[in-house]
Image (cartoon, rainbow, N blue to C red; front, side, top):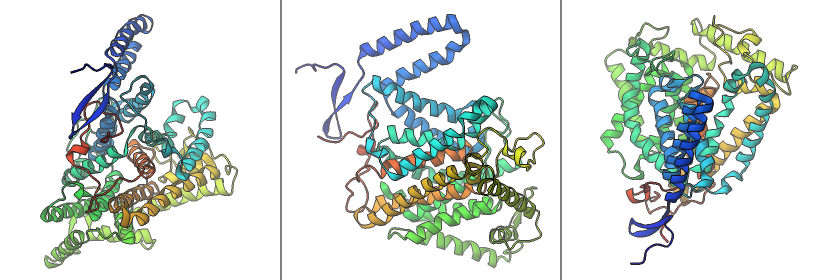
Amino acid sequence: MALPTNLGQIRTRQNGYKRRTPLPTTGLIALVVVGAALAGGAVTGMFGLMAVPLAGAALVAVFIMMLGVKIWWWALLVLLFGYAFASRGFASIGFYPFYIGEIVLSLGLLTVMVAPFTDRIRLVNPNRFISWPMLMLALFILSQVFQTIPYIGTYQFTTLRDAMVYGYAAFAILVMILISSRRIEQFTVIYGRFIPLLLLWFPVLFFISRVSAFNFSFPGASVPLIFSKGSDVAVHLGGIAAFMLLGLDDKRRGWPRWMTLALWGFWVTSMAFYGALGRAALLTGFLSVGIVMMLRPLSARWTGPAVMMIFFLSLLLATNTFYSFRIDFGLHREISVEQFTYNITSVLGTAEGSENDGTRQWRLEWWDEIINYTFNGPYFWTGKGYGINLADDDGFQVDVDGALRSPHNGHLTLLARSGVPGFLLWVAFLGSVLLMLVREALVNQTRHPWRSRFAIWLLAYLMAHVLMTGFDVYLEGPMGGIWFWTKIGIALSFFRDPPEDETATGQPDLSASTLSLAPGASGNAHRPV
């Protein structure tokens, strides 16, 4: 047998066919390791302890050169589901100002920087960057950068911290550069496998967070390691409802009927808990379900949620606890039919006589103030910029330590900081993405059923994010911002790539063989030749 002429490339047999798996040459790896060691010694002599992170970055770069995109991809998955399971507590891992979200972001940027020096990383289809949503995104980011740079000298790091309301868009760009459509399809399989665990965990997380049952925290963190922010969980409940209604769990093997009914039972329980915390949580769940109902794919599963809602209401009526049922955790809100009724009527503007009226009025007054000094005032073109504390400057600070910086509405935060032009570019970008997903959902219902359902799911999930942004400081934080922008990257990537051939059942070929990527495989799946 002839020896391969190029030791930097070998041929392996997998899934019944031969494919080429590029490897960085041994000499290159050795050169990098020796060079890193020499440079580390020199830097240590000059900078002392500063050499530690530099040496760590060099070591990570070597591993990226050996293993490729999969390091960042799996780090991103751990980050996303860590936020889903522990919310703000997980986000506190790290040390100011470099937390776990920023660590994973840096890892992605390092992967892009290393790509030219290894054949283990293949950048994906450049056509992903040629679309109307991508043009709107570029213009939006450019407008925000113009309102950030002039204030760095005055407010320093605070400016960059405030700018993360759009800065997490870097995750969308990294997904578009590094992640193939096959990995995106793999993401839905992983998401489906986590749904049972999430629905079992959310009620427990609610209890732990509200009664301080778990007080262990990461060193220096202000919140326990397990601590939920209700708005984050509510958005995921909306995404989970859309996922189950659309039947996306049957990519490889669907859940049995009894399990589906049980999952809907846990979903109703979680929505009851988190929906009692505020009107926004209820709206996100209803909105996600409503989007699926409006687009009405033939594969939507309506039996499970209908049965569980009928069972839940019948149980309350039969036990005469419809109006008397309540759970009080000693907080300012309790879980009860009365609280649900108030949350719903407050959305319609008909609720009266509650302490929550004061919060709603405070928000409306602040929002009116922002609209007045932008649309009708001196900050029309530029806004107030990034770095300034809007709560202090607008006169709506409620925290003694001045911790509140932005109104409980991310859309109006962008308006206040970047003016009307920046806000309109934000609206145009969101509109272009959502219209793209609606088009994909409608056009592909017959030709590519799974692709259509995937578009509806992303649409419902993103709309839950957009809605929650209007009620909370949501996109400004990593728990909401990184999830949102990652899904933006997934949408802009997946629907710019050509569609895969689907089987007779309307499913893409996602067998174990096609999902498994050999160690070191690049971001693009290798096809038979």
